Length: 451
Ligand code: SF4
Image (cartoon, rainbow, N blue to C red):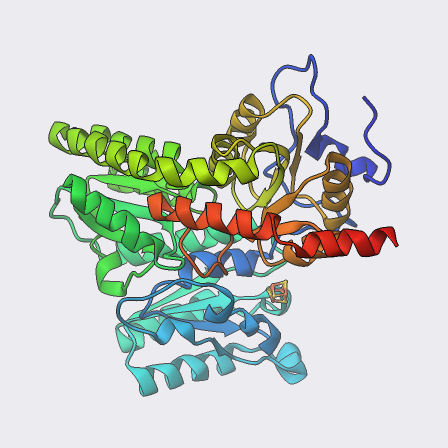
């Protein structure tokens, strides 16, 4: 079938549209954005900051113009049970003169100022676009500062133009490996590290509580509610569990190869995935008792939610959802969650999904569901209209798009203010999509449109 008009020729391979009789996904993904298409993706530096920002006692020095430093805690919702320093952003505020003469001296001064004022244990220095252009040797400056002051000053190679958001994740994971390996702890303990959970709205506390209930100790968390001291304990763990696969599978692979810690991918979005994940963690730990507890606990929680869900299903049944999120694993969980509420996913896309993710997505949606990688606003608008989506699930960049089209929206990105993970998250998610989708405001808007 011909694609709808308005899709750039170069983008056609990134979109799957009416796959009747077509086997295998074959979608183009995990590559740089097409020039001329206004990607919804963030830059490399932003990708790196997503992963590293939640470390509560880390100092983030953004080596670049002041604009890059506007990316702070305020636009991410990761919470802390301890330090609050991560809520600040430090910048070298590069100007024209620095572009001409170089910014290394300014960077050295900024690092020394932070050390003098705060006595930090851990500083990340981000190279932004302009640093990539003028060629400051950020590595050399960080190395000399680390040696001089005996603290961890770690460079993050993240010029915004040097790839896509996934490259930023990778750079952040490399910085974390540099931290861990530079402070290597060897004595093993029975327990897990949680990777790819950023404690948005306190979600990691919910997951940790579930693991405590079934008897699985948590050694370290990457990077939600973490600290320098907790991160360097990570090599002692026996298993890594990876929640946000898009950002943290690279770290999990490196930890497996270089530290001998195996990993499994998990998801705590929706009843089905939360249940399966807890049981699979217990199995991977070889802990029969924990498995029994996981089965009993998840059964109890599922039963507790039955009446609640049956009430909401009446109002949600038959509605159509569009999903546009960061990673493939979250998209898969959301499709299942909508399915369990009697809703159909008519459009689904991700910023950084991998081939495997898209194959799973294709296997659980209908043949005519539109699947797209690295979408732009024009494509999302076209497909949501064509498919008659009632709600869009996305992040801050997708919100205005939904509202302009007069359809409901659910924020499932880092800005969310209430937890959407675990069994508690099922309640919040269901209430939010119901309130947004069944709000009387849409009737007024559509009435006005008809006038
Ligand atoms: S694209 Fe470049 S200039 Fe813009 S925020 Fe990212 S690093 Fe900074």
